[in-house]
Image 1 (cartoon, rainbow, N blue to C red):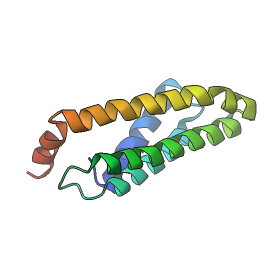
Image 2: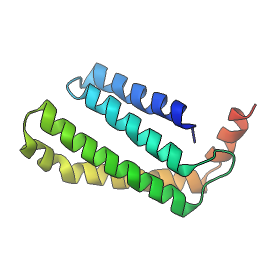
Image 3: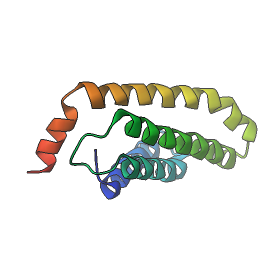
Image 4: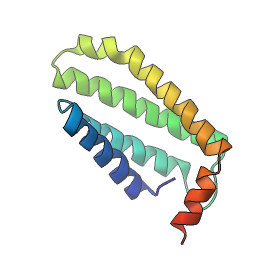
Length: 123
């Protein structure tokens, strides 16, 4: 729902701070991964004036999911110097991404959140 710059700031800084305070080892991996993910999704969804089609949203979320899975996989392999650990965590990352995509889709298409956000944003 945010333009690309704002999406990157919210996703990357918010996630970075969460890791910084509670799980600092991968905080820079989170900063880069979630920043790129938010940028790609926001850019692919397109103009914010109208609600995007389901196919466009699912495509954007799929690209974001790939960025998330690859980013965290490479990040874990680098931070922990253990590619086996990254592979072990892969099924959990895929499950988290799929569940997130379903929840976001339900919220985006079946609630008034998008309309409420647009009303607030365009004041």
